Length: 75
Image 1 (cartoon, rainbow, N blue to C red):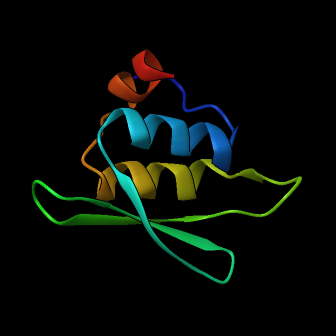
Image 2: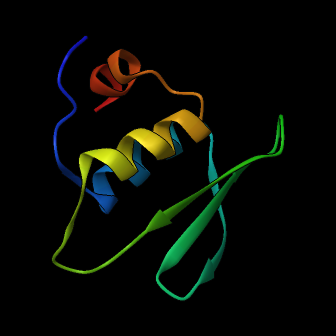
């Protein structure tokens, strides 16, 4: 399995949008995205100037049902 890179929240959001997730609401520093086909929701913490750690990125991808290989291809 390929290594998961450290990325910004903006880069992760771009991948979510490619997978048809839409911004539903913003609650503080968390952006909540929803995919209307199956009502799947994911929350992305957005902090200016800070990257997401590998653990939180992996957790968000798991919630969105996106494999690491697919994520790397969409990036």
